[in-house]
Length: 357
Ligand code: FES
Image 1 (cartoon, rainbow, N blue to C red):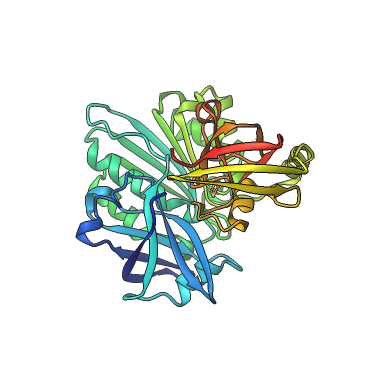
Image 2: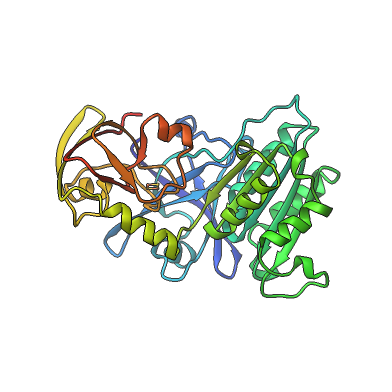
């Protein structure tokens, strides 16, 4: 991650009772450095009650709009989101890091692709950027969105996505699902279960004729849909996903505990970052290589610390590590030696990680 820059907030607009849109005023001289691809996120940092707090948010704009906007939904106890929704205003400044992320496929105007997206809550933000970009850039593509919210009033970016329906009428289809309000057709009530995905695939989309699926929402939803689609015969490479929040369920927690048993009592972590090299002592009480290095005052990139965003990605050059969770790296990246340092613990007494990737 390149060093962050101080960026002025151009606009803060209320979207729902507990969410806002934040527009960043990226100056002309930084526009190349902050250029992004549809579906990517930007990491923002604010000093809140004397503490630096950093979070990543997906841009919901399309790169062709020349605008950088994110939507932030307040989550209970969320330090940054509470600040963004209640305190942040136009004219304030934030530190912003250049956009990043792998949640996209390239635009190809020669293809007649059929896309299907499932999103829940604020998972709509990268999906909005992806939908806009494919619909604008691929004149023959079709996009079907299945969007879950608690109630009509909690739908974030509703105007944006309805606007797409108005512009691309024959190529976009949006289906709303509500978990705390009743719709006439029971199919549109409640969460995305495996049975519901199967029912939808019988009436709304053909899984084997869909060129790409995009999933964004909580871990449980994403994994349920991914498993159901895979069982239907959809190749894994066609299913792209991004998780916003992660919580280790009982089984995952057990796996983590088993992994932690292998952690070296003491290890030396050799960190290479830019032209700096440092030796970080790590004990078993420290929960990740990233945290050990941050405790040692290293200035390293991170955002979610939940194994999702890949901001903390580094290459393992020497030694052996295990990752507690990995929702962000693809199989081929793991095979090539990349690790998420926020999830990695050393299992050998010496480990070298290189952040110059
Ligand atoms: S900081 Fe997000 S995956 Fe490590």
